[in-house]
Image (tube, helix red, strand yellow):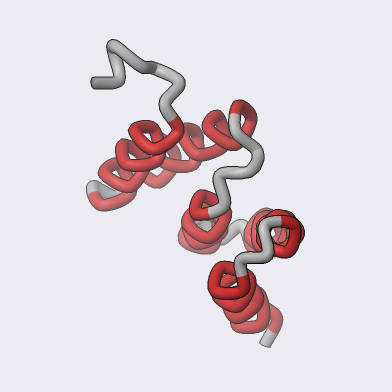
Length: 94
């Protein structure tokens, strides 16, 4: 499906999650970062990217990712995503 639609946000996001399941964190991060370059409002990607940065022991990138996602969530008036991102950020800052 990605051959037909290589820039499809959902397909790239799903592929990144598959790489993450296989512990290929570097590839998963790369895919999600590329996705967000094309579609900066793909809200679900921010939480997952933050978690991947946490797994990579890159706390500052995780914080930056959650913070940016919170801005997008506020713009989209998505309280659920905002709460999840805020909780993830608070857990990191403890």
